Amino acid sequence: MTMTYDSAKAAPAADGALIRAQQVSKSFELPDGNGIFTVLENVSLSVQPGEIVALLGRSGSGKSTLLRILAGLIPASSGEVLSSGRHVTAPNPDVAMVFQSFALLPWLTVQQNVELGLEAIGVPMKERQARALKAIDMVGLDGFESAYPKELSGGMRQRVGFARAFVKQPRVLFMDEPFSALDVLTAENLRGEISDLWERGNFPAQSVLIVTHNIEEAVYLADRVIILGANPGRVRGEVKIDLPRPRDRAARRFKELVDGIYIAMTNPDRDVSAAMAGIPPRRETPYPPLPHATVGGISGLLELLHERPELRDLPEISSTLQLPTDDLLPIVDASVMLGLAEVKQGDIALTEAGRAFATADVQSSKDIFRTQVLERIPTVKMIYTTLKEKPNGSMRAGFFLDILDEHYPRDEAQRQFETAVDWGRYAELFEYDRSEDRLLLPVEMSELTE
Ligand SMILES: Nc1ncnc2c1ncn2[C@@H]1O[C@H](COP(=O)(O)OP(=O)(O)OP(=O)(O)O)[C@@H](O)[C@H]1O
Ligand SMILES: [Mg+2]
Image (cartoon, rainbow, N blue to C red; front, side, top):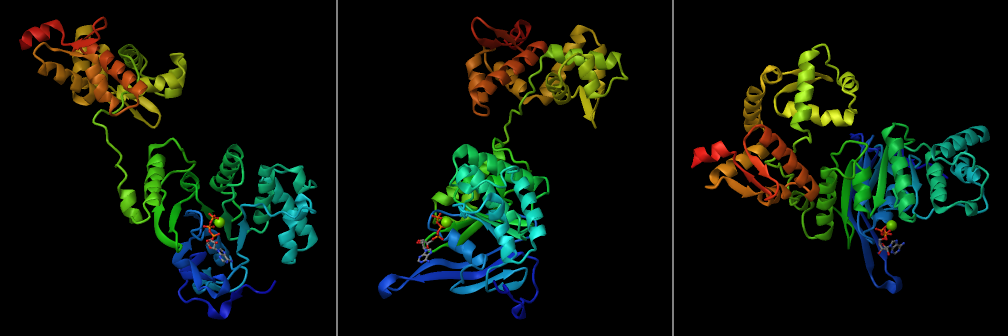
């Protein structure tokens, strides 16, 4: 294989991009002189050091063709490809590729398959072997060095595919739908492992360009998703994935991004950013979630903090109370939300209101609690003010559940309601009549309002 770069044509003012496509178009001649077929039209994009970019497009949008052009495997019809500022005119040695179909040579062992690419560029045998072993280890195939592809499962074959690319220590790793030929679970495992390697900083490439038509996969892996349109393939827009790693598919923002991209993909005529902006914005609930702690638990903690002022460290408190941390935390959160305690760097302390609460007699404690609740807990306040509006000072519990249902899943709405009722009753803002399933103002109060 000959030199890849035409360094004489080095681009001026390289911008640091590892790969850059400038106005790349690609057409194929139709058979029998029936004209030309344009696969890609004026595609411009870049891959910067340290990022994972996903190219998302439907089947036929020219994703694989674009990767091949960027890797220098086939020429563009017009436009240019730069690799670290240099024009790409032949296979680019800064790039290694993982294919959808594993493309292993069946007559070679795992080790030989992995070494193949190094042999081609003249790496001496000893180094080749050492690097291959390391790459095989990295993909979890330790012990399978002398196995043949036919002895391996699909997932293991694709691991060899990854090892074969890793061993080249490319600047940019290209992956063309690397998980799409695997069953769902195998794909999920492998995707997770790749993402772990990236997060741990052990990744054998500076950047990744992955082609996929799986929106979740793109949002799970990428820092940036470039959305391609079809007929002809072109860049429709890009979406920055502003999610911390490791990524949590259950996170609200994750789902928002997936939904937004889905809307963009299913509305090819819409502007991508407009489609993304069309996602319903994160709704700030007027009823922030109450930590599920009972007043009993809260006052227990506050009293302990008062009696044992040297106890500040949360883990220590959890062992003193013989409460698992998971059970202590909602109580701590509730105390903080109520303004009765504050937490700084893992230490908890009473606020002034908290100290007053802990030292007062029962009725005064209730008064303090009522003040805090009305000031700081919108759910309880909403229930109370609604009841006050009613001439009979009473309302079906279902009414409040319906309100909370708009902001929480069913079970959680129920739990939010129960916690709010527990706090409101202690504060003597309202009563709960279980047999009628109604909330009502305490007797004296409803008398007062009449
Ligand atoms: N060498 C070629 N000659 C003629 N047409 C080609 C050639 N290579 C690709 N095409 C056409 O270009 C279009 C895009 O193909 P490409 O494989 O790049 O799409 P893709 O986005 O990777 O699709 P998929 O998601 O199915 O992998 C297809 O219509 C394909 O038939
Ligand atoms: Mg393809």
